[in-house]
Image (cartoon, rainbow, N blue to C red; front, side, top):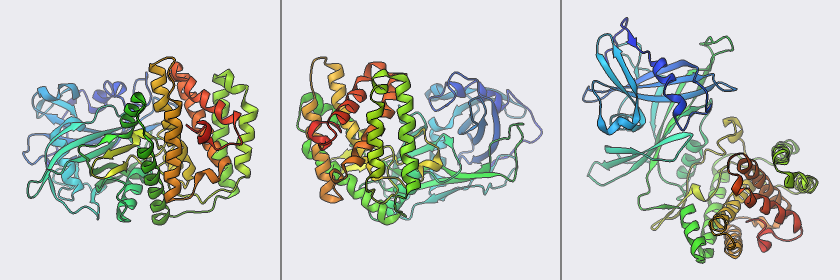
Length: 490
């Protein structure tokens, strides 16, 4: 176990070092602000070689409108590492150990190996304040469906993520067979179980093969965010998942790239879309069987449609064309409220082509069950309508076609989109209930998603705004027809 040098000094302090570094990270929420940090908890993992200090800090940041809790793994080294130069947090002087180079642990292979050892229940968390002492607040858990023991040979961070950091582990099992693993480090923490872990674990335990195998997770508890006065309340604790490991599907490709390539070439995507619809229905069915469901009561319907109305207000304030159609959209929302709703259940929650992999051997695999990232964790964990996932995927088809049209002015991918949408709905209906039989619900959830897109595009990518606005127009101008017959759901 690590020796903790109590009573010595560190310059700059860890908090000061993080304050100057965190604001530039992709996962930092209060963009443009200087972090205002309070350390909530810290814990360590051992390095078998004894050369690298490995510590994870949980810090609360008060720079934004609401306090946000972040997880920041760090590694401490006695000298610079060229391969980690891009992940340097800074340097500090330790009163006993001398100069220390501090790195973002997610990029350090030593941290990756130690974290995997913890997930496999081979290593225990250690105290950051007492020598030779374990920290029982943080524990690793191996999934019951995972039967391998792997050794980490190397690691690399997956680029492009914002709210989390995913690390691909080059690993092998006990007989040397390559067994790659991907570990998601949750950067933003909230009180409660993470849906990504809960849902994928439930699906694997139920025997569903439409998600990667689950390796395990890290859970922990920590003091809740500071009060307005800046003080901590030791009796108020938060708990939840800190990391999640699953098999890495080598040789796979995300569905967005597959679909975009097909749309660009005008290649028929109907067969693939039909299979994806069937896979989606299969996952919905498995989730409904594995986790609690409930009838959609008036309060549930009111809660769900209230979100759509808030999005309508936001979109109307930004885009005059939406404002002129607000009454029509309100009529569509009211029609959905009066419709017959299927039972509410756990769903993916942020379903689109980028959340699906295609494996030549295993077909379509669904990923990233965290739900819509901007919604609070408590909301993302509530039962919801499977129509939200269906609408999300149909809107993603439209964006694939719209991307081609955006890059090639004057071209049209409408036929490609319509064929894919029709095939997806046919595939879903072949395995689960037919979404087309609840037209008002399907249309309302499509409008809800398109309104979300309108707000996003108006604020971030105005040149893409025409895609969701055109979709809303189609949905409103042909209310009596199945959406896919006019491309309205696309």
